[in-house]
Length: 311
Image (cartoon, rainbow, N blue to C red; front, side, top):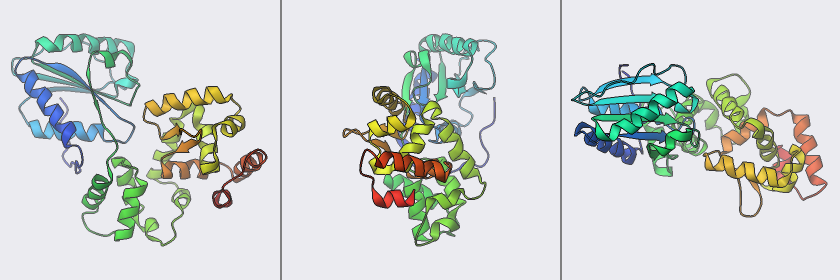
């Protein structure tokens, strides 16, 4: 079994989720095991939650841990009298034999001292959702964001303004808050332009680029929504993206169910809920392309002038 991390970061705002893991282990140790599927978007803290759970248990359990996105479960482990925890991370990227093995373990667990813990991005675990109790990890609320940033800035090198901006821009994603801490100086200016954070290569810029890639075919839609801002109605956005409005509506509802920060509002607007990711989408789109989209959109609808000037 892999050792628990030696230098853990703070776990804030996850008390309810940790309690559910501990309760599941108590049942498993008593011979009534089960399977838990920890779901959440990238950077939400699924691994940090599991690491905190491992530290809390200490040596009370034997672990079999592996990354299902990189390795394969080649044999079915046998439950032990003192209890066994099988941890499979990134099961959304697991191959078919590994998924089949995890399904078998999940069916075996209720009658054994066995706890199967799986982690996956929201909505991407397929049939495993049917055999496991789902534990959704949400974004941190405002109070937890503020507490996390204060805990991460242990040396107090950031101003109160920079701390608040990090809490706001992180959108409740712990991993993003950690990366923003490294950009603390850039966040301390009175007039902040989030696009300035992408002027030079950084871990934050690479992470945001990867999140934009996660949109797949909807990345162009994300960039259009970031360019048009509040003026991005579904009809205009679909036309600029080269698709039918009804198709775009269906796709937006699907990605919203998976936790993506791009959704369709009741008023028919395409809303980008993550300010920093929207800034990344705009910053990684050629200025000439943004101007073309704005010009084409103006032909059919009024554009928010303040936002258009920024674009």
